Amino acid sequence: MLNATKYRPFSPIHLTERTWISKTITKAPIWLSSDLRDRNQALIEPMNTTRKLRLFNLLVRIGFKEIEVAFPSASQTDFDFVRHLIDNQVIPHDVTIQVLTPAREEFIRRTFESLRGIKRAIVQALLKE
Image 1: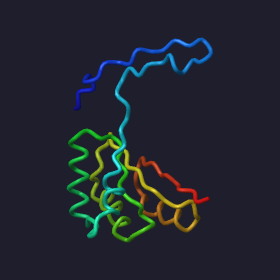
Image 2 (image 1 turned 60 degrees about the vertical axis):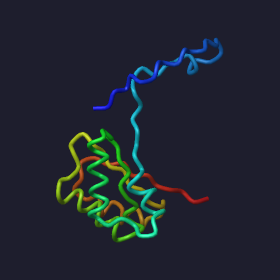
Image 3 (image 1 turned 180 degrees about the vertical axis):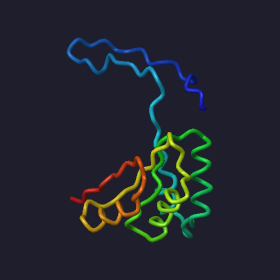
Image 4 (image 1 turned 135 degrees about the vertical axis):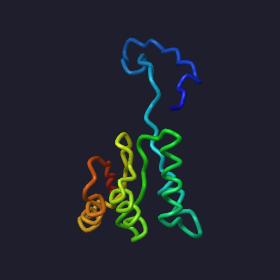
């Protein structure tokens, strides 16, 4: 596990009209890795399931507990990767995956189809204005 004692706590500023500013963080925050999704879309040749799985396993070994893995309604490759993680029981019990979807019914249905059988996941719906 990663050591979260590298940085010393911030000294709070005491302002009587605000309560949140006096609060201090007493434990490391939860970090969400978006490398499997964000970094993949920037590649000339996007990662296939084998390469994505290698990166997923590395992120798990590093200690990430929440990992954004795909945009399953955007491509068959992403859909298949989510299914691979679930069907092959690759996701550790203490890790939660996150997926993205546009906030449109057909995409939401496709996204939830990719997640069929998973016990826990975060679904982020993107609104277009």
